[in-house]
Image (cartoon, rainbow, N blue to C red; front, side, top):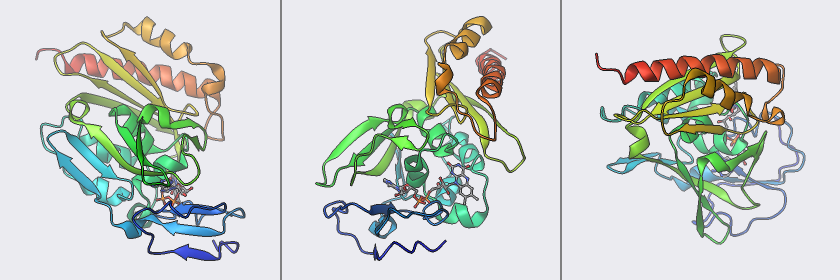
Length: 276
Ligand SMILES: Cc1cc2nc3c(=O)[nH]c(=O)nc-3n(C[C@H](O)[C@H](O)[C@H](O)COP(=O)(O)OP(=O)(O)OC[C@H]3O[C@@H](n4cnc5c(N)ncnc54)[C@H](O)[C@@H]3O)c2cc1C
């Protein structure tokens, strides 16, 4: 789509890209959303991909994902075998149902900062207990828990001129067992619900991340594996106004699916911990 109010694109931003931030500016990452809808309030785009941030930096302490890492790069990443949660990286990319052209351009940071309920990179990073490094216009950094970043449909904690610089996933989360369930109305549709359960090896705990069905990600955490009733009651306790509604599902439908899949995930993770 032609963005005919945009009069300037900064193709070579400085190392402090937000230093000259002004009203009408927007960060440009893959552009797959920015170029897909009218943006009458925008005058200038600042291209973050030109900064050539490292896409993926695995280490003994976890995985750093640069905000401009593309979905394609993340999908191609082969995690070490001891990262039992590693397959969730690719599984979350697969929840982003679009053509290879979109995968080649869309970025992890763009997906998170767009902050749609069905943002699969939000699901992935909340489930794996990531933190986000945010860079202010003066170059200073602050860190937020991924769980606290998205505050509602298309809303997050970024202030004008602030950007998402990187996502850091700790190794302790990458060593957890995972189980996920996703539902979409059509085979290539946007997620109605997307849930991920994780369990620490050798421990009877459960962390359930609830996304897509709710306007912001939620984490239901249990130190010991809950019984079915307790888990169902925890889902029932989610306030009605937090459930998302759009043509992909009513709040009631989403709550029903969440309860159904939560129990499946509980069963799968309990079985995964049983001696064979
Ligand atoms: C066919 C198709 C299917 C799609 N399916 C989905 C889907 O299932 N789920 C979903 O969530 N989205 C979906 N999208 C929307 C969009 O493509 C994705 O969310 C994509 O990941 C956005 O990334 P991008 O790099 O292209 O972001 P851009 O379009 O470049 O930017 C998106 C927004 O984030 C801001 N931004 C980008 N990077 C940063 C940063 N580092 N710091 C601060 N702000 C930043 C931009 O200013 C803009 O407001 C789909 C789009 C298409 C065309």
